[in-house]
Image (cartoon, rainbow, N blue to C red; front, side, top):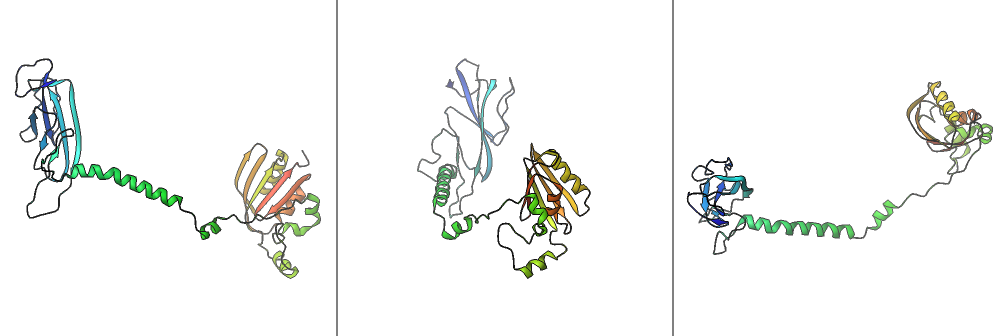
Length: 280
């Protein structure tokens, strides 16, 4: 494409370049692509310098038009937006210059260009931030952090059969923990005598338990005013119920008496049921 200036007849392989500043680019076929004076400039090279541009956001555009000044079909247009940062005040104030990408430097003497400087500093800043974050993540953890993150020792539990629950009422009391030795005899008696010792939320987990056992437990909960069913989640034969107990009702002992051929055990506020009910 050979670039020309001035309006004359259209010739294949020839065209004119019009540069725009903060104006909508005309692209209507058969209509002149020139805008108001001061908002466009015509050149014969692939770059153009706008001088005395005020700080702030500006829209720069360029269009290749025919010799008569009308757009091609389809239009050949490029648009970009730049933000001019005000330079520090000095004894000889200077307005920043703008160069369309692809052109030469606006100041042949090597003057400062904020747009070019910002484009050079941005990738350097991104790389520096990435390296700092990577170095921080690779630093060894302190002893305090390792101590805080060390897992707590797991308690040992034992399985208790239905007969043991029925024969020993103390198993239904939360004061008899299966994972650690119980308190002295006097303290255990005082804890057992508390009327609301078993109040609060419990989780009942049924593993490989028949539907009859689940139905028995749900019926027991529905007919016990002190118990409120919060949630129920099941996956095949594994079921988990979350309940709220309002008073001491010897929950574990009651479940043991209701279910047969089942292994029932308690770990804090979690009650585990494994086996079959009498219907299974």
